[in-house]
Amino acid sequence: MHDQVLASETNLRRITTTSLITDNWYPNLDELAEQGLIDREQLDGRTNEYTITDAGYEALLTHLTWQAERIETNDQRAQRWSQSPRLQLTGRRGGKYTQTGDATARMH
Image (cartoon, one colour):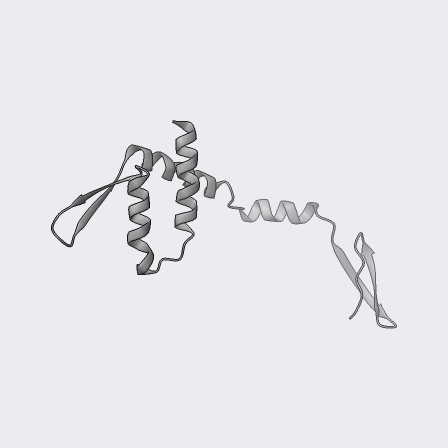
């Protein structure tokens, strides 16, 4: 079951990163239904109703967790920035910048 959820989550990530052009909606819905992530019920000759399955719900939770883990807060960004080597430009001599820090910079 875990492997199926991971495979479904990977496919869900691919599908959700596809641009939302109306031409893609129905093929994507068909693919999700074939994978058992949603159920499709035909209401009339032109209308389908889609509902999420338990497997689809698990794949969606896995996907949302994956996304949430990649969000960097302002505090995390500030901490990362404070720990990274920075270039501090102190002035310019003869077309070159003098620097204090670990990096080298040149005027182009």
